[in-house]
Image (cartoon, rainbow, N blue to C red; front, top):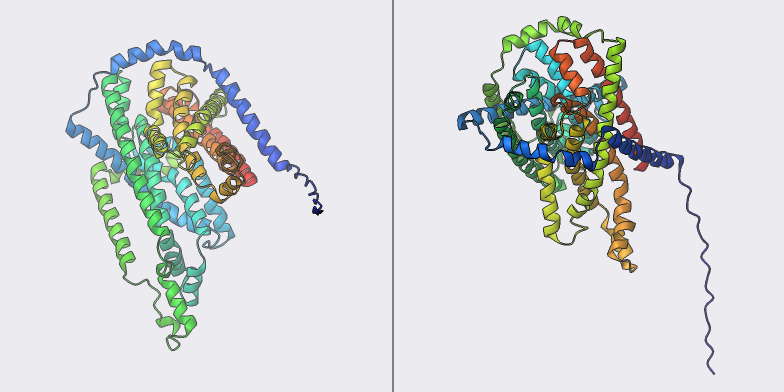
Length: 566
């Protein structure tokens, strides 16, 4: 008789799930309120299938009026494109030149003191909150019509993005090279230049290329206030209802944006990949110098005689050639835009008089009421576009992620679709929807919804591809199906970035809703354009203050939510 001994099964006690924190509950409540606000905005603006169906006839008539497209002569087309690219290039270079010192003083490892760090961060925030359209209106008043106002407006506004990204990157850099230069007797300037700026160079170029894309789209909008380039030509054509010429120019802008998107994306990827694949032994010359000091290989060399400048290796030669190319492009750009320097210096002398036109802001009751109503409409457009865009972008972003869709052709198709959508300037979309659906918030919402699809779907696809595959493999090894792996691992890991991306999209849509209002797409932008045209500059200041308050409030909310879900 055989007796089988069974090992007693040990009961595993149920571990209670931790209760959700108050902060997480607050994030969920905010998201729920945003969804409710988006639905309320859609209803209030009158966006419904019936209104869209009623616009089909207008769309058909618009298509009939825009064909055949009337392209300008080849020489004029080349001149407009060259002038636009020159304005955008000079604005981006100006942004980088201003952003690097601002980022150095704003970053904790390189700042000269707490007061300077606070001032630099405040300036970066203010630059990000100031719309380039309002800056262009101010500079046009100071320096007159022409490209100079657009260069200064886009350059200063871009500091808000570039300065923040640069300062964040500085704080994430390895502190070893800086300590090595300090140990070698280097000055603070040598530490900042050799240990910070040189390390940061790939991020500087990559961010500048991304900002060039954004400024190219913004330059079309600034053409409506007289900055120049192809945007001004579009404004003049559509102002005379010449849709054949206006839409032909818009098609040129579309092709240009898509080409620049592909080109800058490829360059950014190559730069960042090359930076990440460099061997550690070649990282910085200062590492080798301090290693020699620690080994005692140069004990008799005084600190004052040690080499504190990088050698002329391949990397330094490449950097020098890059600077030479940038300087050549700057010279060509200046020749193309033909800046009147006399007007520039005279405008600087008239700064006090120009600012006196904008201050004090108008506080009349009827003005405040108009600004408040227009600002509410702007927020409604942003909320509605964020909700509609998110609903459409989430499935597209999922299908574009290569680690979710096994078929590379499917993911490649949706990646290409995202690039095409991102290449369409929102102003062009707003113009089309204004003609089709009429003036008002419906056109602005539809235009921003399409733009939101391109932005959010790309961010979501990138976030999904960056999820930890080890977690997915662990769940899959326990017998989970593909659907279970997707929801239990991929979605769970992608949720915090998705919340951050949605808040960034809302912030971006509020700014964009303000700008596309200049073409009649609803919101405070239309009020802003009318005030500037009739020289009601105190009203412009009132609008600016209202926009800054809303933008900073949304940004503060976004920062809190990102820190909570991180």
